[in-house]
Length: 431
Image (cartoon, rainbow, N blue to C red):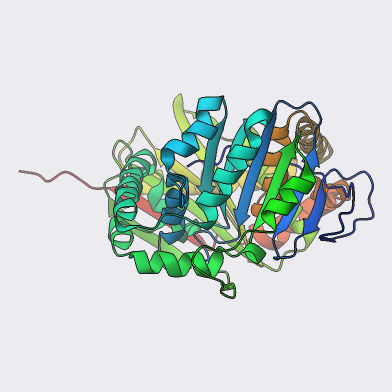
């Protein structure tokens, strides 16, 4: 299932203390969410929005594609949770969500697995019961696992077809996406039970609940939660770090209708917070101004890949050729043009660019207060995605100056790219 928003901004406030929980204090009274740690270790973030017609609930587990040891198991588990749990099948999930005018959603990202129900407040209590039953007592029967395995494989086919033209270059920045039908087929019911016990423990879960509901009732229910397969210490997995290759990589594969792809990649380590903000600003700026270039009356499409992983930053520009067959001359022209984009950053109106970027973040923050759905999504994104630029980053952004831009370009982009990746289309056989 797909994640719908990528850059969201957050607020967090402490509203009240409840005697049955340990409250994590926050000094800033302007923050919007109350955060409490329950007796069983579960973290709850909630926000009361009186007279809001719907309640949005999220459950977040910090285990995604990057941290899993068995390729594809986090995604398969996500599907199984949405199939239902002990006493709550798929029909029951639909009965308390979509058939009441709500919906259910979720996704497995590189960093986390997330589940979400949005329901009318009149049906919140029933939906909350089904939500928890599906997560904590997931049906891992052979029949259900086999059904969801087929669906995940079907999704792989669809996803691969949609992103096939870009997949060869994406895989260098996101190697976690390389799970296959074979790795999915190899996952057993035993593997899934072990994975569930290792990661789906209350102390490894964060709930976000927003809307018009009774927080004391929610806390009372959540404190009864336990893993349906038994208690076990949470398995803490380290980040699976990687590096871009050094030098030039050439691949040949079917990328029709494109003739070739070209990626220019940089890997940076140990950036300061201000340097990281400059890099994210450059990614935003590139996407706003340089995605389309009319060169010799041809439509040319460029894009940016950027990623934060642990202490490393990855930045790349890639191009797909639609019109001309590959030649060494074309390759040389594109390499020169792509490197010139970096040099053009120096010519930007840095203050204006930064002002626009900050205004965009503030607009996202303001919109998050409109509804329970937007507020919940906003808080969720702050927690799960290290690539997000949020209100947390505003102090660092406001301190940036043109000198910071110059320093980043001089330090990281005046040198040749660490990686050039060329992917050429398979040439048809001559008969």
